[in-house]
View 1 (cartoon, rainbow, N blue to C red):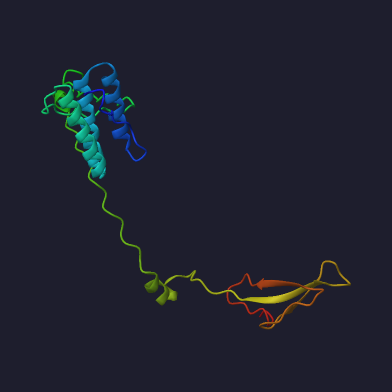
View 2: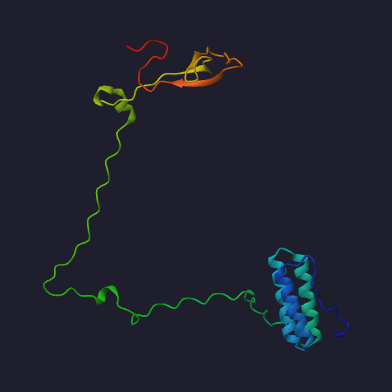
Length: 199
């Protein structure tokens, strides 16, 4: 009767755990260890159920029951424990023994030496002053920021002097002539008016 039974094989829809368990079951079955083969088939059925493939889990459970009955294996054999990952897990770090080194309580203060107290934490810095408040009173700071004028101009070299530039301001929306360059003229002095003579 055992020869008439078809041993389950992995299917494309099986998860890695199911394929792994079925391969282990097939290896045990070929060695003649029917008990371990049934255990691994039951493990594959549980893995299929955990993956949500209920039909596959039911089919594998039926095959395990048929093989167990054919080989006179009691149905109460628990499935094997999940196999460890293929990669070698790192060994856990052993706890430190008290004898390995001195602890904080092993040190004593010699006689006559005062105990050193830990430094007190520094107070937090004061919050920065509000920029609105600082800007509302420009007389409080002698170096208060003042805007600098910048105008858009057309620049071209003088035909009579190479070291002389002819600069003409451009109105809003006006473009520089073909023979001139468009540039931005910015005053270095705060409060200066570029379109009027310096006083």
